[in-house]
Length: 311
Ligand code: AVI
Image (cartoon, rainbow, N blue to C red):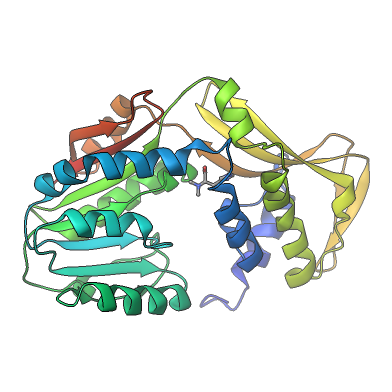
């Protein structure tokens, strides 16, 4: 519940299903089962982003660490697994502090314990919050070297333009003058690579997408029949994005929290955008929020990019 007393999940579902293009924001894909399925996705043959970003981070760790500088305070937004930040921490000269910001306090506790045991001198300040709603302000430790934001995984591509803008502005303010920001960005490419990455042969992504209906049934008293919806991954070239949809296989009515929603055969619920933001476009977005894109590191095929923004 938020301050208004209305469950935000219920609110988003009721509002979204009442639209002409039915839609549910992608943040609701990540209940415990959804998060596990997403972890499975990152290991699929077709899903190139995670392993490509890891390759870039491993190959370029020294260059990235040098660009950040010594005694840095690293702030990771949406700190899921520690795999990626550990590559940075291992390469940095005397990293001073690590501030993982994550909605799951369980995740954070595990992260803090693990890092303290591996990096004895590192101060760890976990912040339990949605990275999008966060104004870190006084939660950030003072002192140390440069503040460096870290936002790997191309989650930027799941955000709307206006949310990217406000996130980049807030982080610019929080991290302050002299700060930098390391961001992972999946890149535009052929739909022959993109579509299978979001519609894999084993059906893990389909399960991940359909799990949203399971969650609505369980948490909001819905009666979706999971067998009468199918997963669809669609390349929208005009907006340079993969869209995930759930397509109704027949005309049907579904109830959620006592409200009835009608579906025509073939009608979809739009559940996610995964934008592939070209670097020149991202540089413009960063600039209008007070950052300058100064460095980029990519893999040999240019599938994925890790960029450095500077305040
Ligand atoms: C978390 N995010 C960057 C993933 C992506 O590629 O957009 C989510 C995802 N959706 C389906 N597969 C992966």
